[in-house]
Structures are given as structure tokens and as C-alpha cells.
Amino acid sequence: MKYLTIISAILILAACTSTQSQNKSYQKPVGFNNYWYAGEAELTSFELQQARYGEIHSGEAVLVFVTEPFSRSKQVKLDNWRNKSADNISVMKLNFSKKFLTGIYPYSMMSSTFTPVSEDKHPDILKVTTSSQEWCGHTFAQLNLEENNYRFRGFSYFESEGDVDVKVPKTILEDEIWTRIRLNPNGLPIGKINIIPGTFYLRLRHQEAKSQNAEARLEEVESSDFEEGGHSKYSLEYENRTLTIYFNSVFPYEILGWEETYMSGFGKPERLTTTAKRINTMKSAYWGQNSNSDRAIRKELGLKTE
Image 1: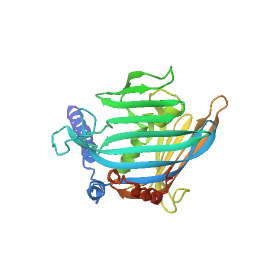
Image 2 (image 1 turned 135 degrees about the vertical axis):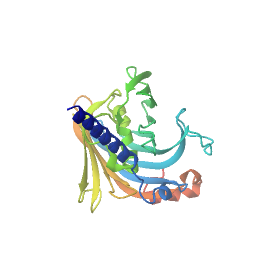
Image 3 (image 1 turned 180 degrees about the vertical axis):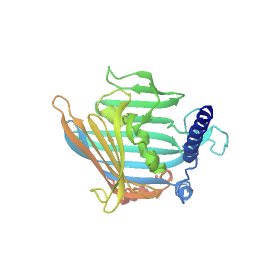
Image 4 (image 1 turned 90 degrees about the horizontal axis):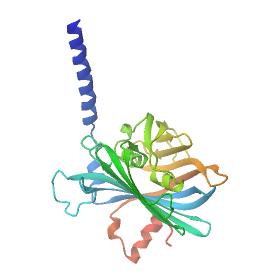
């Protein structure tokens, strides 16, 4: 019996070691470095139909994916990117912008997420920032990884929402799903999970940053309104909300669009669905394309010039 116990312990240890090695042995797809480290960002434009105030409002969204050197300790982009210290880690950054009109006044929203490329060495997303501007005022929120917590700081013109500085127990962030899709969609969390909803949603619904229960699914799709032919979709189903992101099943796993359904409006809210459908995708060193003549590139993306 003693020997059986020892053997069982060895088998359990071997199983655990095997699982860990499988996670660490994940290899980035062929062409990953050529695509993501060529000195360009990936720009994708979307036709946006945004739910707000119990109605659907037309607008546009842009996803900007790019890799960059990042300070693990300061959690900012490194000025001296040639510094090869352990503090310099490569992240996949997503700048996610939305612009839409609600009646007479415009909304401009943007979030930035910073996800380490090497998930085996740095398994947690490091930082999220989100801002929103409209004629009533503007807000800003930031989450920073601090050991076993995220430090959440929020600033708002609403009395009940501004100035917040709290610690939130570390868990999955919905904002990181977008970059996880681009890095390793097969590693996405599935099943019953605890997750902090996206910061855009928290802002629009005036909710605090705390984890919620959700059911996560990753599925193959033969065809959808977002793409003809096979692709994938990743869905998060909360108690009162669903988010589904559609993306190509093969590298570089481009985002094709998304649907988000929840109660929109105040007083007598209605269950409405926000949709975003891809217009165009291009690679570009856009930070150098800042002259008046470069505005023509916006037309290629199908974006409005005003």
C-alpha cells in the first residue's frame, strides 16, 4: 500500500509537470515575428452600430494592434528600447477607439491594453487604460497589475464615481481577450469563469470594476454576417449581457467584428445589440503618416475625414 501511494504521488507529479511543459512549449505560429516585429502596426476599421440611451447610434471603431517594449516595473512604454534588462518585456498593445453620435453630441472612447507576448513568462495582462469624452464631461480609468491584485483608479465628473482608488483581486480581464485572440486563441479561457467586464461597458453602464461569473465558449463557424466561409467566434455570456467576438481561425487571427447585447437606456431600458463589422485591414507605420496628404489613407480604411 505504501508503494502504491508513492507511485500515485509520482504519477500526479508527472501529470502536473507534463501539463506545465505543454503550456510552456506553445510555439508562436510561423511568420509571427515577421508580422508583428516589422516596424508596423495593424489597423482595422469597423462600421459601428452602438447601443446607447435605448437606441442604436451609427459610428466607427478602430483596432490598432502593435508590439512594443514595455517596462515591467513602471508599466509604461520604454524610451530606451535597446535596454535588454529583465525589466524590458515585449507586449502586444491594443488601442481600441470608438466614435459615435448620440443626438446632438458626440462620444469618443478609447482603451489601451498591454499584454505580454510571452504568456509562459508573464501570464497576466499588465495594464489597461480607458477614457471617454462627450459633452457632459470626460472620465478616465486605469488598472495596473500589482502582485495578486489590480489597482483600479477611476476619475469621473459623476459624484458617485470619481475619484476611486481600490484594489481588485486579480482575475481575467475582458479587455485582454482581444489581445489573447491575436496571440494564442486556443489558450483562451473556456467554461465557467470569473472575469472583470470590459472597461467600455463599465463606463457606459456606470458599474464598478469587480469580477462577475460568465460562461465562455470558443467555437468554429461555417459562415456568419461578419465573414463568408469558416472562421471562429469567442463568446462570453454573463447574467445580463453577452459579448461575441468573430475572428479568422488562422494566423494572424484578424478580428472580423463583434456583437454585444445588454440592457441599454435609463428609466425604461431595452435589450439592444451593438455590432461592429470590419471595413478594411492594413499594416502601417501610422505614427509617421501625419501630414495632410496622408489623410487619403483614412479613405482606404473607410473612415470619415472630419
